[in-house]
Length: 90
View (cartoon, one colour):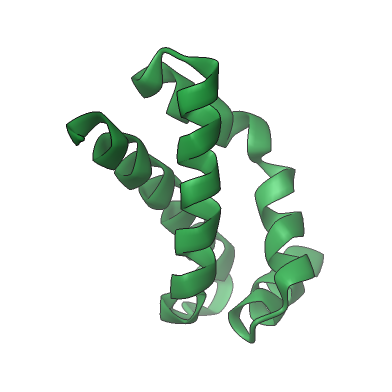
């Protein structure tokens, strides 16, 4: 239940709640970024870009009753994937 409250706070613009949500799964996001970037510095850059993008788009997360956390986690992984591919295309 705490996670759902954090998602709601993050959607309202609470930076601390967003940071807590990201930090809860930071290792998984890093592994995903590193698997594409093959370089620690580039993976960290992708994660930084992901955080900025998430903050800008946090209001777009749809409230899906009990699936709100899944929706939020999916947004994070999509953002991480998108940022790593964006950097690789440059």
